[in-house]
Length: 473
Image (cartoon, rainbow, N blue to C red; front, top):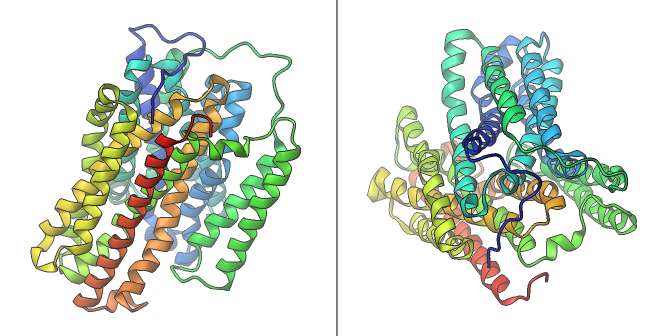
């Protein structure tokens, strides 16, 4: 895969303002990632506070994820049409207002509704952050900026449970939502002062594709619900939702074929760079989620580690991702996105293969060492793949392509949580994982990571095929 120069759009910030612009993009990525994980630790307390079932309070997390998943491509396209700077400012404003509403919610349904609004703001921030790299950062530093954004995403995801737990103990559940308000205000001020201005509005600009966006959002919502509902068991309801998602995808293709200004051209999914980048991103994210799904069961059931020790071991992955992100971006700038994409995937294959065959006698280090390799490889892959995809995008399409790239990652994480969990359970030959013996847990772990290794090999095959295809195909 080649990595041509990222075209610039409008006026880039001056050299003195560029670090502040990058800081703004990093903070918006941190906030959106923090919102994903900070509420999880408070679910038991929220169930008590609202006298609700655990299934009901799970919607506090699910509502946020669904809003991001269903809207991220549409808001990316909207940014291309109306201006990315003004839409980012609006998105940060919505996120801050929704955070206040979450913390002040008197009843559960209001909290869930506020989380939907918070997810809308986060979708805007996620979709347009990578799109702004081409506007705010010189082409020779694009990989570095992408690596930093990956670092902030990992930091936000890892920091959420820890920060949430501290705030929950010190100030109650409302504080976990209020804490993002000052950070959001800081991001808004930085965006206002440092992000490049939007182009003047063109009277002949394309119109927003409302029918296509609506159908696409419904199809994504159906798929996400099919993968996340049922508490890990795939039943009739999951099958019906999956069928609805497939029908919705087909209907979306019909609608887009007739649209004068589609949400995005389906041919974009078949393009050598963008299409393969989306596919590899989804596969790599599915594998990354395997470490989060399988890890706690393996560490508890096979290695008999205490909960506190499990938390420390599990934090190794996000910590490595945070440390590797910026150096990975620098390597992308120096050696090229294509080479570093392959290097990251090779590291992921090696780590997954080790996890699939390392005997339990190796203890915790036998799990941690390969986990570090997988996570470092994923961080390198993300920096390289994101840079490669965004480098070949026309200026007027950066928002929607950035949204699709983020969507592919989210869908991979959602799919990994469901499918790889099922693979683990199948390998353990039981649905009651919590009661499984050591041999069963080890068998499940080995099978899950063997499948994960195959998925990464598939991603490598896609990367190899892309290098042999003519551009634009």
